[in-house]
Image (cartoon, rainbow over all chains, first blue to last red; front, top):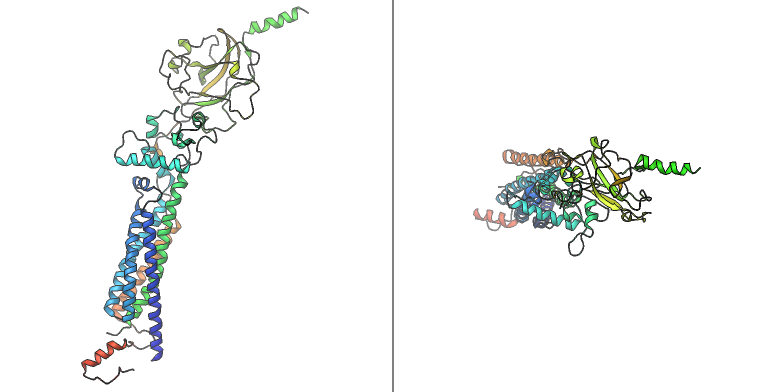
Length: 256
Length: 246
């Protein structure tokens, strides 16, 4: 039965290789999700107030799934080499549970991308930016985040400065339209943080105000991360599917 | 022949006010983001229009659209009849932004932005002692404007009325509809494929648990590594037999 032995050894080799890849991908997934959760672009307050922080939940799940995949891959390698039915059954059950969690994380990340629309951000910005009667602490966080966003990315509003003209807002209640057609961070500022030409900014002269909106600066990084979590997770799951099928097949052939 | 110059001199006096062909207009060049806001608008300065009136003071008259035709040129600026603070009710047209010809040098230097922002003075909007205040406009309009040149208190020249200018009206944020634009292809693909994969895995697990299966070349089981089989044979007290290979 040399043929059967070869077949077994090939299957064992494949499964060990598959588990090694799963282990490495698990580490990579954990690293990617930790990077995202550490909030490198400072956008978390905005997403939290727009109830769009599911992407962060998906990333947190991703961290633990990644560690679980790494641990389980080691268990799998041991189980395959020792051909132990109990170890492999434990491995299969735990892997299925991890598979389900990672599925949830991927779907959440993919769904999130659809819900971060400009209209939602616009509504939140108009209602909360420079809100003089903040309902809770999050409004001042939103104001701070928007100010930093507009200063660093040289942008104004969600789609442009005309957001502040087309809609009334919490900002408009405390700042008159004639003095502040749009907030001061929308002006081109000098090194001291003062507008280079305040009249030019109020008039909207090209060169003295920021004419583009901030939507790209927000959705760009967030969508990139959501894409990473969703599709990398999906790729890992496809590979895990193959390894698990092979393991179930291998397990069914082990004698008692 | 001497009568002719006399007649010509008399004619302006008889008409009173010179009608200049110019009509004030919203600034088109350079394009300004704030050319109209909710309470201000921007018109071009009247450069090279009032060349012959070096002694006059040039005022801007801002009127409600329907009151433009009934505006009386002899109404003086700075009086209660033309005070900004009483605009739009009962005053239907006010006068503001006075300047002499020196403020509007002709010709206009290239590259300079020569505009007048109507509605930019917020400090005097409620101050009745400043009736010529250039305060923010109280509503979306429409409004019409013209320039009027006064020498002393006598109007000597005027431009035509502008076309009606309507300001921007702001909607409340609650009017923004945030219903989703549906699900993208990404999400549908991921959900469907993953659900199918998960279902297949569960089915495979259930199938092997309940039915077992033949594997790897037809024999029902394959031998385990040496150490385990030797242990098995130990229980039968057969020490020297090697592991039986089928």
